[in-house]
Length: 294
Image (cartoon, rainbow, N blue to C red; front, top):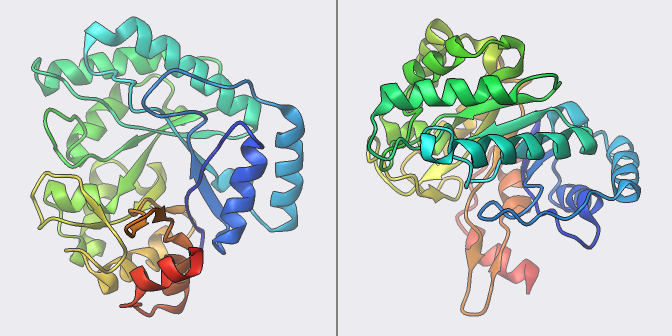
């Protein structure tokens, strides 16, 4: 099982810190942003941290092929008002990913902001064809919940984008369990969902899965993640997804909420990964997380 979570990447020790955090959770892969997802501030990549990180990854059987980078939220390829910025900034992010030694970047397709999905898909295709040139990096389009004017709410929209991309070997999909549940897919019958995905897109394009429960009922189009087993998807359904043989080689990444008390908030990933490995729901998750970090 290839299982991990979102981890931090900061100026103090960059990728080395990300790897150490991953190991502390009992994970064998991870996902990170190369800088804050909401702004353009980026620190230069320091090779010494990268080299140390790769040595530590090797010692702990973390395969770089399974490591995922997430593109910043501020990139919106769907609306032409952002073309110049989005293309330039995404190209720069891809260069940083190459410098760090990875090859998979998850990207939210974008929001059409009133121009309609059809035009937005044309725009996304245009931008991706500008970006995916002379790079080994693959863009993984994330399935979206349908909040606001998001594009990529169903497999057909994702398929349309993929069809328009020239470099097919550089495009894939990241399936988010909370998002597809909120978009209206019944993940309690995940084999049927995978069959539909395979028919429309092809399972060979499924290169990452975000494992999240949902605070909302199916079809709510809200996109509010919940801790594993504490939402409307449920623990057993998520376990069935994670352990599905058809996707056993696909990296699975937790993006569940931090656990909060009156003072601070704490990552739940160590305990959620233990639940997943043991296939046993922990109804004291919140208390255990708080006690561990305090």
